[in-house]
Image 1 (tube, rainbow, N blue to C red):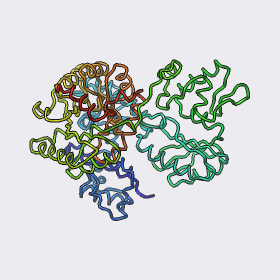
Image 2: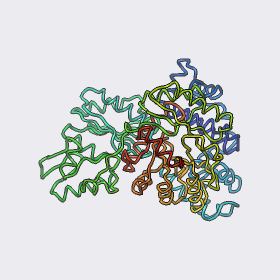
Image 3: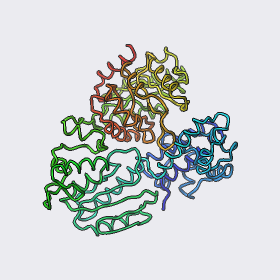
Length: 567
């Protein structure tokens, strides 16, 4: 099998893990992390680019050294640098970095002080109370590690949404090309917009199930066939993702789609409503006695019990059925409602123009380019602002906004002075360290940052990295209310490893009257594609167009942001 993008990204991530444990230069570590994230998000195969002799350094954040390593991995299947690094530490040590709350310094300490080299050894040490004996590791820290281990174990067999999305798109396209297939769709937690998936549930409407199954199990990405029958098959892909396929008749397609989309809790509530009306609802249809009265479409299933159609992202039994009964379902915001992106980064003047062109091509009215505060020395800032002015003077139909992403310091101050911040169109503040502060200190830190008169948007408020770092311990209800009262905005960052705000807090923010922004947080034109994941998160939070400020026209947006900055 050719080397896949996921294999290259995993190699770079492991290099970054070992370098972190060895306390290497943080810029070097970040280069590998950034490259891995870029590679996972690419829509085209690097193997194909290498074999075609294309220049990999044309990709964002890929320099000559990284390009050479990619070529080596594609041609040989391994990386000599990683092999060398792996001889310097115990082989399983890097897995400890995947446990939320364990950074490289703590992993090094646990290794040297307790000889902890594996996740299982860490669990034993925590249960025996040995971790709390290490200076800097209190009993509360030990309890958090135990909880994190439980969460980590539960997440081990789940896949990030971008990996699942690529496989889902490829498989659906393949299934649609099989003779006799009338409809093909992904159901399950993927369709509901969950942040990670344990497997993919595919549903096909066709008359000849055996023919569909034979084609499905012969797909090039299938590594193992677990079961194969005339109406249901289960396979494991080469990347270890499990895929279940079900084939149903046209007349049952809607009922099956509703049933296999879930959630389980939502379906139980729907079935109970059916029972109260003398109906039986299952994956084959809606029945009164033996007569099928609905099931060809999902809408017909809901209509049979007197409900309007309920969007998949809402189907978690969190009040959506009650809202449907009372006629108060939200009119969910859609990707097409976005008029711009308020959080992107550019590495050079050339990439700035490329990002602007892509944003324009996607129909955006505006794009906020946010310089990172670590790069905002006076000379770089002046050049950045001049480049924005030049592009705005030359381009029509889109306006670039001058933004900056600042770090919220441990004490709640921002890492740039007010005289710099006031020169920009918007200021985004985010947490980039001190994630383990106690709840009250963490909360107070964020509230103080939002009180800065130039503060516009709180970026990725929970500061989590899915599968790597859990959310901070902070009073999100206070933070949300403070954002509302202060008049600043909360971000839903669409990067698949963030998806932050979390859906429950987005719903809370809506209920409290706080406004939000859905941003890509991207570094390349391809990252605009991630906005679909952010919008799914917004839907799971019940957000409507009016709840998201970057659905506004430019003039209205400027007015809203100006109010937050006291202008």
